[in-house]
Image 1: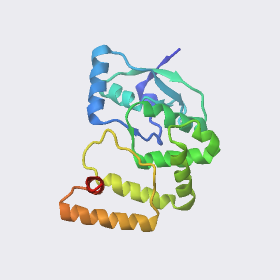
Image 2: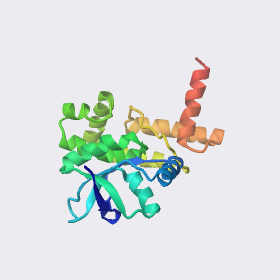
Image 3: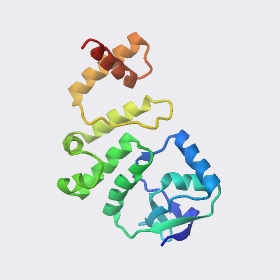
Image 4: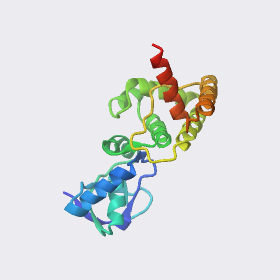
Length: 209
């Protein structure tokens, strides 16, 4: 059974990595405006702000409901601790939208601290291979990996609805080699960013094989 909670009391979870494109946000808003219906928001009592609630699932819906000036929101209140909350936002929020990579990495870092690897593997969308690679980075050079990801994301100048994290990683030497090659491609081919340069490199390879 849901309960009605003032929208002013609903606080986003700081580690929510999920983002929805402007296009799909507009569609979701239009649907809610027309029907007046929306999926119940999953929240928990806020761990630091008495009387408020922390959103576990439904960040995009709450943004839209605020925009259309809905004052009270249908919520399911779950009593979960920080560890359980992180697991929920790592799974529930992947049903809609896409992840911001650097935020997803931050979330995975905390989950790896909270759970045994074998247990976590069975609970979240990441594959065994992805988690194994992440574990290596988490132990060796997590800050460097975050910097690389942030640099990559900063190249995008438009809204991207389906950004994906690839399931391989580069060490520092490999990264600098690949980065220099992509920079050279960008210059010689007039490409916009390293992502386009990587695709150009893959296309050239495929055309020769």
